Image (cartoon, rainbow over all chains, first blue to last red; front, top):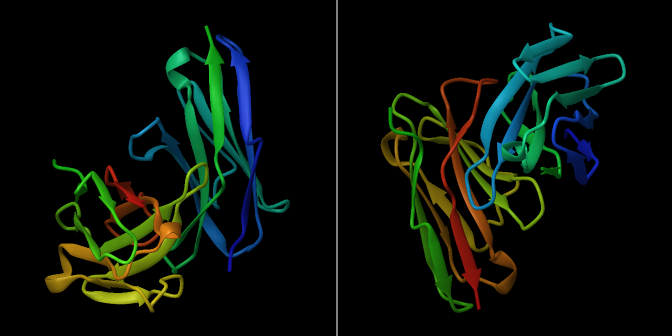
Amino acid sequence: GENVEQHPSTLSVQEGDSAVIKCTYSDSASNYFPWYKQELGKRPQLIIDIRSNVGEKKDQRIAVTLNKTAKHFSLHITETQPEDSAVYFCAAALYNFNKFYFGSGTKLNVKP
Amino acid sequence: EAGVVQSPRYKIIEKKQPVAFWCNPISGHNTLYWYRQNLGQGPELLIRYENEEAVDDSQLPKDRFSAERLKGVDSTLKIQPAELGDSAVYLCASSLRQNTEAFFGQGTRLTVV
């Protein structure tokens, strides 16, 4: 099956700085890569996703890049704000299997 | 539009007791997932349904866990008997079709004492 690794496990940045979270996956058949944000005690919520036919996707302060050759994808948050503090999970889904494999999460702390 | 609804939100039981969790997915979503999330880790799939059929239950500990999705809508996940190591958050999610966004419920936090 697929194996998703996520780094770093914790990340602390100053408000206004950028944050980057990286994930690698093992199965080249994976074609859908969502990112979820989970605030303490709340449900994971999708913040951005990317498909394997696209190399980059941006939504305001959030962007995701995908390198299919290297099998890694990254989440970029610019101009971080305290409300960005949460745990972020990457995931990979295998084509036609409809099954999500999650990374172990990155706890982001944005210091005001 | 209502999201994925789970109940109860919290459950504390003694080991060896049974427990059940309930999930109502988003209307029209054919795919339903049950995930377990241990503290500080990402969700791990327990079982996936396509309509009423369990198409992936390879991660479900079948000696004590069972699940059902009658009529392809609501689903229940049961543990009997519960063990201390079952303490976790149990998340239900649903999606419209394959490889599209999975919407998560609030989860049920289970504590086995």
